Length: 175
Image (tube, rainbow, N blue to C red; front, side, top):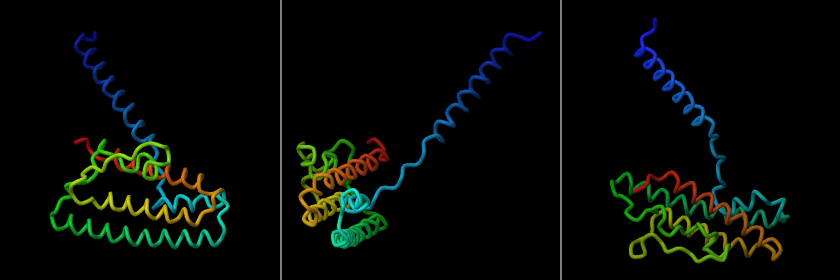
């Protein structure tokens, strides 16, 4: 005969095993997110066929994107040196604090107002400066595009910025 406490222990072990096995597939079922383009311009270039970009436009946009990447590489090196030297970035983006990229390219993509920077009195973080570089480079890129290409290109670039912002801030711990 099986004692009552054995039944309770077996039931508890069984439910724990089921709960553990149910959690593992859920974590493994989330596929990794595809990598994002390195910039708003690179995102637009991925749609060159849809936008019917000419070879000259593609070349000029690639050149502009290369310049942006060199600027941002210098900022990343500077930030890495600060981290290695023990200096912290006191004004890094905080979730819910402004969200510079959230409203598209400077906020004008969706007609919304641009959020306030996270720290208006101090120097900008490397992330904020790279974000500003991306915006400036995209505004230069718009000059290369025709009037008919600009609305869709802005939509593509704004979507890239929104997804990029979401990914950066989702990974940050709440604080």
